[in-house]
Length: 96
Image (tube, rainbow, N blue to C red):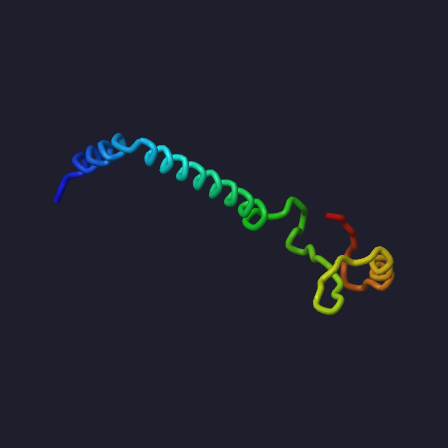
């Protein structure tokens, strides 16, 4: 079984014989690592870290459905929900 230094030297000679392949491999690895880092940052921020609000575990989203579609609550319905609300501490609206 060949030792590690022999394998590394053989790999280096192979990459020196075909520098285009080596550059493509390094660039592909760099793009992959960059993309993975970006996706992890987004997922970490959106899923793993808590929301920056007090009692964030008590927040809920209220939506309406029309047939099979989920839609935003209209302003008039939001006002109606506020008037009839007996469960939630407060209601607020946002626009994405």
